[in-house]
Amino acid sequence: MNWIALIIAGIFEIGWPLGLKLSQQPENNKWSWIIFSIICMSVSGGFLWFAQKSIPIGTAYAVWTGIGAVGTLLVGILFFQDSASILRLLSALLIVVGIVGLKIF
Image (cartoon, rainbow, N blue to C red; front, side, top):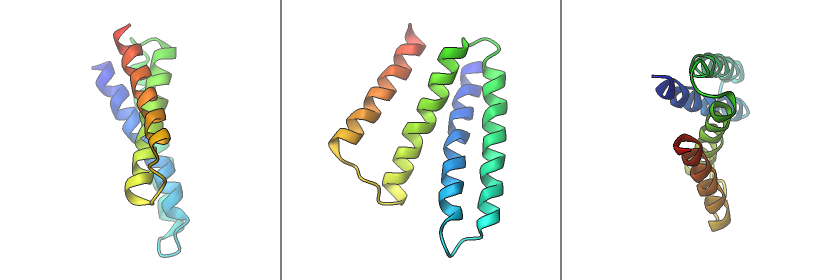
């Protein structure tokens, strides 16, 4: 159950940089997206807190930030035309390999 909470925390970790990015778009309501970001930060932190009850802090934090980093990278590539160079994707793959390693070992 704590690993599921950690994955949920990581998914919400993607939401706050997305909200900040969307708040900068002229056609969007800036304050709604800033509030969305704050909510995502709070929910993400809450699930991380819960997950750390049985997952070591270093592992939980690395997995949490890894999900957030790779997820945000993918959102940027898919929706904001960020670069999808081989080196960027390889770097993201290394983060995923590290997360899997922390789970396994």
